[in-house]
Image 1 (tube, rainbow, N blue to C red):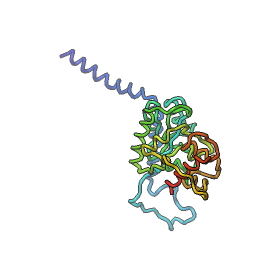
Image 2 (cartoon, helix red, strand yellow):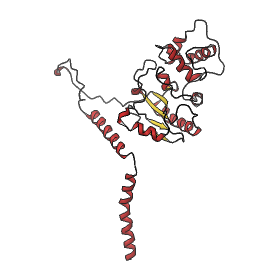
Image 3 (spheres, one colour):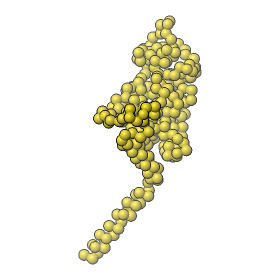
Image 4 (cartoon, one colour):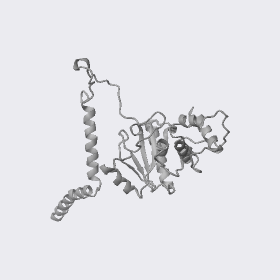
Amino acid sequence: MKINKILNYSVLLSVPMFVLSACSSNKYAATNKVYKEQAKSFGQILEAFPPANQQIELLPADQQSFIGSVNFGIRKPGFIILHHTAQKSTDQTIRTFILKSTQTSAHYIVGRDGKVVQMVNDYLRANHAGVGKWGNETDLNSCSLGIELDNNGDEPYSDAQISSLISLLKTLKKKYNIPAANIIGHSDIAPKRKIDPNKFPWKTLADAGFGLWYDSVLQLPPPNFDPATALRIIGYDVSNMSAAIIAFKRHFVQTDITGVLRQGDLMILFNLYKKYI
């Protein structure tokens, strides 16, 4: 009986030590704490009644009031933007995203091994898109989810990585009702600045229902076909036509990535343009 008491006491002592060990082994405990503190501060902003610092400065106080509606919701993403990390590993990208000095982040990282790390709540705004434009949207960070693929930008994407990406996209597309056409690349929205995700298998994604692709049978466009109008309707910023063409070809052609549209490119563009009108 005495031996059993000693053993039971030893087990009890080991429990807090185990918990302490488990907590101390989390190398991201400090940054996770900062995340929770920032999320809490955002919650306090939303709870403020009436909302703080939202008064109409040009109207006197007796001419304005706040009455809470019961019909409202939280941020709902309408786009998904894919990136490559241009780094050596998922761990390196995580370190980049937990440093305040980088001012950059994404909602998800998909590793070469297929493991997925979420870093920002879907309902919050991550800093992944930067300055860009797609259609009439000029603040893509505020209406999109950012997914980073662990890839240096010049290597194949692994089968495990693409498989996990498709699983993630299935979940996000269904949850937020995101149109297939709104799953695009960083280079699509920022053609003058970005090339990512470079050498990406967009057709594989389109075949799975994520993003659009051109048909196997193409036809020549009519004589009055305007490539600039077609690119703009698809979503590209055509203020720099050469950059827009390069971004389009990087996504849909992936050969001869120059600022010139050849006959085959025009046939692809015409086919895609008809899907958007």
